[in-house]
Amino acid sequence: MIVPIELVHTQNIRYDITIDDLPQLSFDTKAVIVTNPTVAGHHLDTLLAHITASELQVVTIPDGEEYKNLETIEKILNELFEYKLDRKSLLIAFGGGVIGDMTGFAASLYQRGIDFIQIPTTLLSQVDASVGGKTGVNNKYGKNLIGTFYQPKAVYIDPKFLRTLPPREFAAGIAEMVKIAVMFDKAYFDFLEDADFSNENILKEAIAKSVTLKAWVVNQDEKEAGIRAVLNYGHTFAHVIENETNYTAYLHGEAVAIGMVMANALAVELGFFTQHEANQIKVLLQKASLPTYYSIKDVDDFYEHFFLDKKSAKGSIKFILPKGLGRFEIVSDADEAVVKKVLRSFGENK
Image (cartoon, rainbow, N blue to C red; front, side):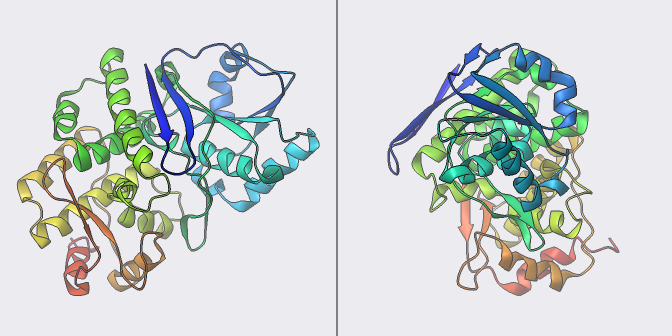
């Protein structure tokens, strides 16, 4: 299956997302695969058997969100200079969302921009992170606050890479599926409630549905000036959780799962959502073995972190909230007292 990205409104860029067995790829230039030891140990030999290039090198960076920083970007760039890449050269992101984000960011910086492709190996990166051209790294102030919008030349999604994925990593991807279903497609949400992901055909269908929805959004709004911001449902809360826990306690998808529960609680408090609908989402997340609770130790501090979110502007916090399954509401004027009331319901004494 091929899902096209067509950014006709901004740069007239087009590329394909291929959801199928990894094809043979041939490049008449230098290429560098960026990966981590875990992915390399499981799948690098498979990838190397599918790629030819005039020169092919591998850059291996540490595994984990805590290494998604400028120091690692500098390491990647230094290796690219050592390999004497030029502006016709190519990077290949081979791993999860962290690898994809950093490889894309490095590609956007090296000699003011070289091509890259995405070959995602985690469910989260296959259904979300590899699609749409967001790149970047974290710093002490928050998640993905340094980065660029930089589109790949192609994305190749092969579900077979998921066979070695640990259960927690797989569940993290389900959280992103739930996110986009709640925002845009109730029928997809209903599908996820009954989906048996041990069936590879159902898994492939679920990935395709998520990618198609994400592509539809990105094609309308590449740089998050409008509807693409809706994909941050749950993330405003999740990014604070990740920052508070130094990006080590939760996988990104796990934090998003908790963030969605928090966003749902705010939506219920504001009258956009019923408690029954909020419970439906919570049950689906728990069915996937995702966390749905986080103990907020300092409500005021948690609240202040919202202002570092990229979606916040002019002293206003922007919350993406569900308004019934398959619909959304963007709220920029939520009363501070109401938001803190919701946050206190996640207090450490609960």
